[in-house]
Length: 110
Image (tube, rainbow, N blue to C red; front, side, top):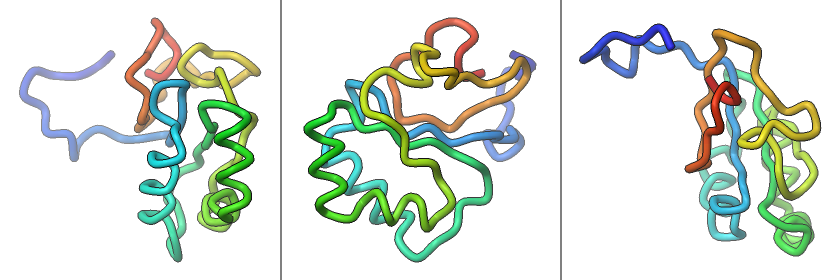
């Protein structure tokens, strides 16, 4: 992965943000992330994917999707996404994502 033992995290470039997964995209998680992004712009591209269609609908009713898109992130379909590399949601070799998921199948998020 091109990392050195003891390397400070501040030296690791981030190419993308992924907020999602079935285990870490509950409505509470999306509310917390939206609170951070509200009124801000992301410095890197990113994808937000609710953990279920029910959570996606609730987030949209609360306007969380608009907070993410106004910050420059993509509001994607609910369910499997970057952690499982579905729907074409996958980084290129050598890229890294800051991700909320606790799942990282080999080669998916750097």
